[in-house]
Length: 66
Image 1: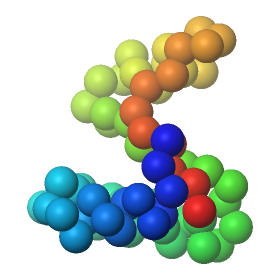
Image 2 (image 1 turned 60 degrees about the vertical axis):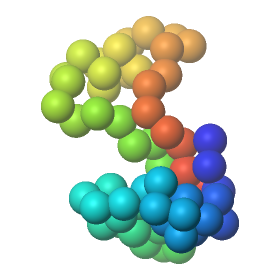
Image 3 (image 1 turned 135 degrees about the vertical axis):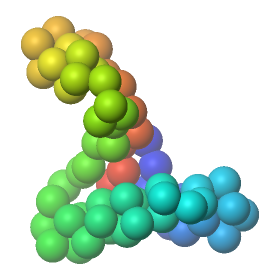
């Protein structure tokens, strides 16, 4: 789990870069609009999303909070 402050630090350090920057900026926009938390997952693997929904306790990706 990351806060927006941690995301900013990772961007500044170049750890989050390239195509990931617009993705985390979309997360920031959602959080600023009132969403409590965002989970970023690998959208190329449909099993990731299905297992998160169907299997209690199984979580993939990164949660970002304000």
